[in-house]
Every structure is written in structure tokens, then in C-alpha cells.
Length: 281
Image (spheres, rainbow, N blue to C red):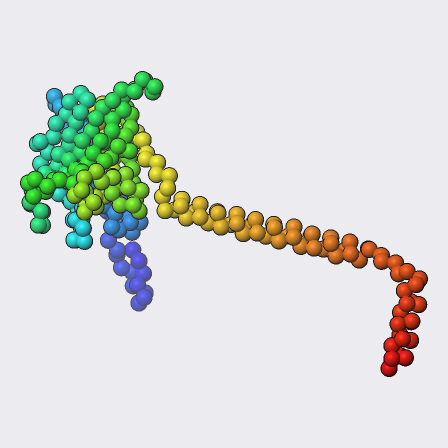
């Protein structure tokens, strides 16, 4: 019961416990929606190359982009990783020491028969006592016979872990882990964002703990080195000026302490010269 403004008592509907819980849940969902960051997509599940019913290669990237010279950039992310329209990986092969992940996209824009291939190898190193996998090359095939090949030998990790890198790209601003190794590759730019891969020793449907790539000469590190060098030069110049000023000050003090005595003949000589000058005048 509640009293109205006119002084009359009116009956309010009772709220059950279930209704209260639903209202609280609705408010909680609304708050969570407000806290979510817009524009961040959930990554697609990884691609898998199967061998004898077991995964041999797992590969995932948040974004896959491709560009030929100055043409429009192609975003192949959804074509590559969308589970609704899975990319054709039927030509992928996996053996004990070699594996090939083939993603066939078909005709894309003006490119006919576009496909991307990742060549991987598995090597045992006695120095570390374990097997390591590496991505030997990444190639882009198009128009049936043309191919752009990139060397990716810096992409490697132990087979007991996965490999992760924020950018695996042919662009210099991303440290260029993909190096052109064919003439056609210089016309292409290829970038994987949030690149992660594992091969040859996969024990579950999830990636093992990742070995993160180390790019030592990123633009941020380069700018930090240049700034540090400039500061060191300024500091060295300031120190040099302080030492130079102290040296000048010391010389001035030394000159002030030096006494030059005059000989007693000097005044007489001076006076004689003055008398001679007077006679001439």
C-alpha cells in the first residue's frame, strides 16, 4: 500500500522474487554492455591440417591482408577463418618432417585462383636437445601460374610450444619478417596480424604456450635510441662548456696574481725622451 498525493491509499502490485532477480540480471547485462569495447571482434577458430585424424598444423590470425602494388588492399580474414564459409585446405599435406598449409580462395577481385601456402619444416637440434618447427616460406599464387614467394625463416619455435607475433608482414614498419625471395614478391605486401601457429606436436585443440617473436629494431625502439643519442650529445657538449669556462676562469685568476716589476731607469728614460721631444717641438 502507498499513499497518493490526494491522501488516499492505493495498492501497489507486489513484485515476486523471480521478477526482482530478472530485473537485477537485466540491469547487470546493461552495465556489462556499457563496459564492452566496441569494434573488437572475437577471433575466428584456428585452421587445422589433419594427419591420421590428429591435428598436425594449427594456424590463426586476427587479420589477413594482401595488396598488389598500388591496388586496393584485400582483407581475406573472413574468407580464411570463418567457420560458416571455411576456406579450402584440401591440398594441405603433413608428414613427419615437412608440412604445407594451403588456403585456396578461388577468384578474388581480379585475381584468379588465389591461394596462400605456408611451408613448414621440423628439425631436431642436438644443441638444445629438442625438435623445432619453422615456417620456411609463405607464397601467394594467382592467375594459375604466377607466384610471389617470401622467406619466413625467422618464424620458428620449439614443437612443444606455439609461435605468436603481433605482425608477420612483408612491410618494413612491421619489421619485415617476410622477405621477398622472388621477383614477383616485390610487387606484393602481405600482413598477418596476431599471427599464431603450431605444428608437428599438437596434443590438444588449443595452442600450447607461445614463444613470442622478438623484433629488436621496431620504430619505437629506434626512436628511443635516437633520442638517447641526442641527449648524450647535449650532455657531452654541456660538460665540455663547463670545463672550458672553469679553465678560462682559472687563467684569469692566474693573470691577476702575476706582478711585473718596473726597473728604476725606466722613469728617467721616459723623462729624457720627453725633454728631447720638447726641444724638437
